[in-house]
Image (cartoon, rainbow, N blue to C red; front, side):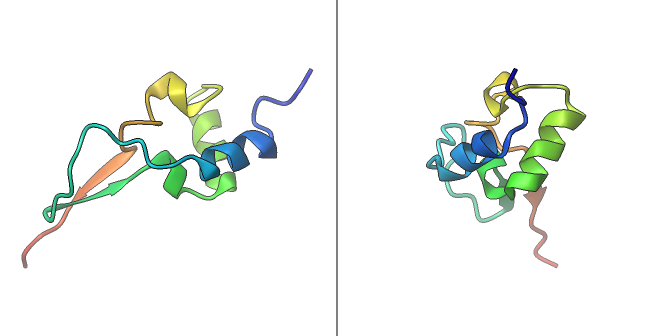
Length: 72
């Protein structure tokens, strides 16, 4: 049985284009997508949430984090 957190899966996710369909460029927020993470960080995140792929959490289209940018 193939390891579900294999490097091949992480590499595939890194090659995907940004499919973020939920947001437009926003100068007030900084979005982090799953594909922005290193392969190692992708594997750790998948393991932490007990999922097999980013699609299970919609991370292929939704940011994993949105950080507000303060004007201060």
